[in-house]
Length: 311
Image (cartoon, rainbow, N blue to C red):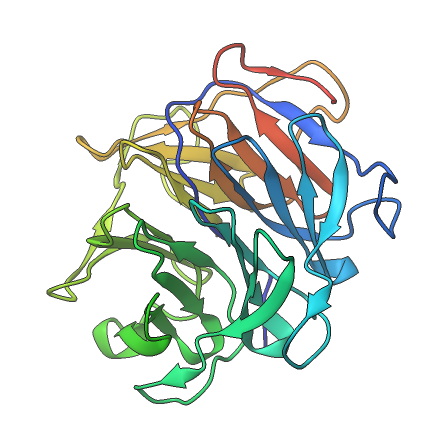
């Protein structure tokens, strides 16, 4: 059974406050608003991509706040998304989607808009994804997948399309199951994973397959643990950002010290708090983006002012 999503990932820097990005305008979209958005990604130009799970859509918010649907020209079956819960964008603007209920990873071509299935050449068992959620991309275009239903983190080779298992969590750690979010550094050296069932952020060395927990020193006034991790992203300095869906806050793990701090929020407009965070991303200017799937919002955390305003 597929659970609520997370993750995923983009580059950026240090953070400070929040700006509500948008309750969906009609523009070129079929629906009047988001419906249970589950994940978010951002490219180098400031375009934001949303896995709009309840509407079975992938949507793009440009730098001017215009919202459009992308990925409607399906080259492979099935001809449509079904509850997408993962989204990531590469350096060329191609968008990758964890099409959760279709058990597929799909690519939306930046130039043509064509949607194709990727990760179909399975080298390791099982020969298929099972409710994949978080997706992430390294600088070479390799795709990493939180294959939630199979308790696996998998890698799709950018050139060969071969799918190999990076690690199966039940074998490495019986308590760590159902990975739902994944992020990767630019070199593909370390992959970071979160899991619904456990209060851990795990780092996988892609060469040795060694798993270590990171972010265990909490410099916060509130709860000194994670409760329900639902989104993960890295910035350009490899600081880790995680969205906690139970505490409804974003936390930052310092890449050098491992110290954990809460991202400050200064809400100046309605709503005055988050209700159900799901995904997180960071842009090149340090702004943090999150989705609130119960309030049907995409939010932007401003790196300089910390103010929360509706766009």
